[in-house]
Amino acid sequence: MTGKSLPHIARPPHDDSMPPALFPSLLDAADWAQLAPPVRRVHGEGEVLEASGTAQVDGDTHALARLLRRILTLPEPGADQAIAITIERDGQRETWTRRFARGQMRSVLQPGSAMALRERLGPVSLHFSLRRDGDAIDWQLRRITLLGVPLPRALCGHVLSRSGAHEGRYAFDIDTRLPGIGRLIAYRGWLEIDHVR
Image (cartoon, rainbow, N blue to C red; front, side, top):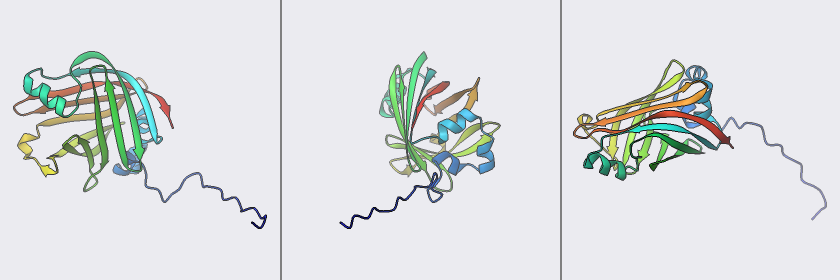
């Protein structure tokens, strides 16, 4: 020990070498700037974000739809369900845990190929391109893979997914319909941010 103190090295307030969060990296900077503030906050702020609100959850109730929801850890239908969500960000990988009154849904989101967003739900991955529509994000389904194997487009059905804002709160609208099954899951509602760190 020489008794000399080491010089203090100040950490810069922002490290430009770090990649942007997942959603800002998949949208043009000008488009990102035009999104509603609640959308930018939920999809871009903090390492951990917690929010809560209400969701209307719909879906067909036949046995095959119920079984597939169980495999994919999707919630069961029910009106006015309380929902709480935790988003954990690790670079450009995000883990979303959605706790509904009638089930918990967890998915992992990360960059896919060709500037796409990949969302993994159990053995299934949904690949989306993101597009700004007004002040909202429109998620456009491009393909589905099962255990890494692409499914024929005819089996992918129709997926509507939109992240927007209503009355100053984050709003979501998701509707998934599959051939031979019908409406697998549809949930829409709002969130208010409770905590960001």
